[in-house]
Amino acid sequence: MKTTNEKQENVKVESKKGAVKAKPDAAQGLRDFFEDGLKDIFWAEHALTKALPKMAKNATSSKLIHAFEHHLKETEEHVHRLEKIFESLGLKAVGKKCNAMEGLLKEADGIMAETQIGVVRDAAMIAAAQKVEHYEIATYGTLRAYAVTLGETKAVTLLAKTLEEEKKADVSLTEIAMSDINLEAAHADE
Image (cartoon, rainbow, N blue to C red; front, side, top):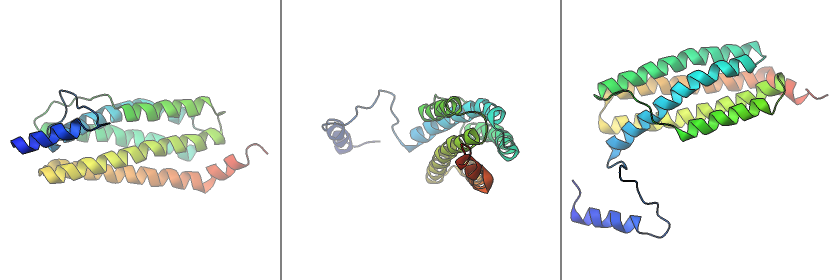
């Protein structure tokens, strides 16, 4: 419970010039923000399960196609883990539109439209996919830290497992890009 001084301090901060006024349903504590973050990444993972097959269909490198297909299976497992986390918190597993993921996936669509199918598109899709991975790494890392702070041990374990898989997916994409795709793309117009 907030003291009168804490409430007054919050009013002072919100009334500062340039401060964003909080919505009426704004998070009141770390738990609220944690739960909101789970809803956000739940939506994001669902959106990714629709985007990865499209990316695989637009790739030409067999390594990249395999990476997208493999990560689709992992992403489906990430959704399942998030459902377990919601259940452990006594919450219904629902998503909340993730503007960041929506933007990243729109950018991936744009990249595909701006490149010819082939090695250049493959290189560009790797870049788009790594942006997604970096967003997920940041999100899962933060949610894991919140779960530690809140004493949610089941969530900590599940979030840590997903975080490691996201990091491995990022490394795999770098390896694919550096093994041959980027070099071939650099010489594609010769």
